Length: 546
Image (tube, rainbow, N blue to C red; front, side):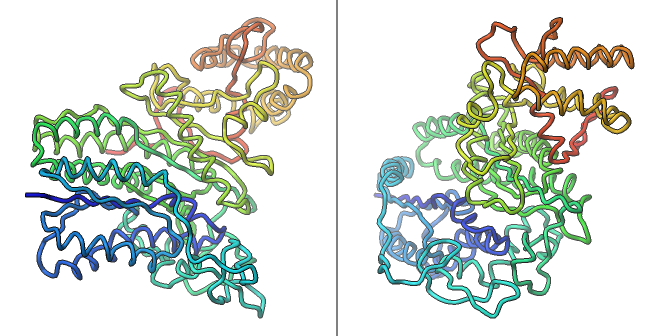
């Protein structure tokens, strides 16, 4: 008897969600993705199958759905109806789908997966094409299908495209389903819906983003799990040996991973975001919470602490959830531990968000790449970050070469591991270095500026002058506190920088092909007002959770 497997995946969801800078529309798009594989999917299955369980899901998350069935008629009806519903419910959302058939569910899945991989690389024409004279939405460039009064203090209404109009649906822009996964007890209006109040028409309970005073700095955070290929290989091996149990184990692993990601996000929200609410409003807005990844818009001063807390909990919660799967399926080989890497991109609130998400993902991939160089089997948990200071946003490799490197001097260490002895600079050591220098910022502002801020600025102009000034800085440091200067040199060494006499605080020697420093990373954290600290004496981390 033949059985059937159906695979459905949305594509470029961050681009779809971040197509505009209106937080209300971003919230609506995020909720739309949640509802597609939520209520909309369940209603469709009920329409096709009635009260009978003819089609069962093997995996589902935001915008992704895998299903299987032994009923050919039910699967045929569903695969014909589902794409039509998605296109009508989520205009302009790109997706791919494939159906496979086999004598076992494992073989049916392999057949469908091969087709899906082909479909991922097959561009689909957007139909119908609009005529040249068609009205377009000025903010997105897409063809307008209606009018909406989204602009504040104007009598004119805005031409709006189909996707944006859907995102502004009252049932969507409140974002209730997604935010319940971060803070189950918080009402929907506890999350901001407005970044630019001077441009946006407010509605009741539409709260502005709680920035710090006049600082309107944001961070876009993207974190993604490692070792997924190891888990997939384990499932492949299990499927070969026990093909009839494949759907059950696939669903168990998928559910465990999603539950671990959700729990890690909830703990990070509770520990980092909840205490920083202003007038009951969280200083963040979730964008995507998928299987083993998260994308969130967060106030810049909290981004690093939130990300670190999430990454720590991601590994812990995956161990807990996958252990339950291991107990049920003792023959399954699971990767231990499951880690994640993250990218943080800092920018002003008025910076176009759709230009930021690709660079944020690129930062995450850069952290993954450097971590895998150290250990491709047990990938270290790590973070990369960057602050946008120019108009043009390119890929991170180009930024490293064009903005952060002068000669053989690179003003960043690029990536920081959460744990020591991973072959990468440790985040805790960087935070200890900043904590060591912080008293000089508050009590000796002139001394501090000449030490760190001026040092970073002078490197781009005159390396010889910088060397002389840095030497004078060290001499003043020695006169004020020789013990702290020794700590300073010790922390530099922990970061891979051996302090030679008459040399700048960069890795390697003067003749090295490429030398790196942590000074630029410290300046970035200082510029965004980061609050992620660690005590030097006790080594107590700010993010601790049971």
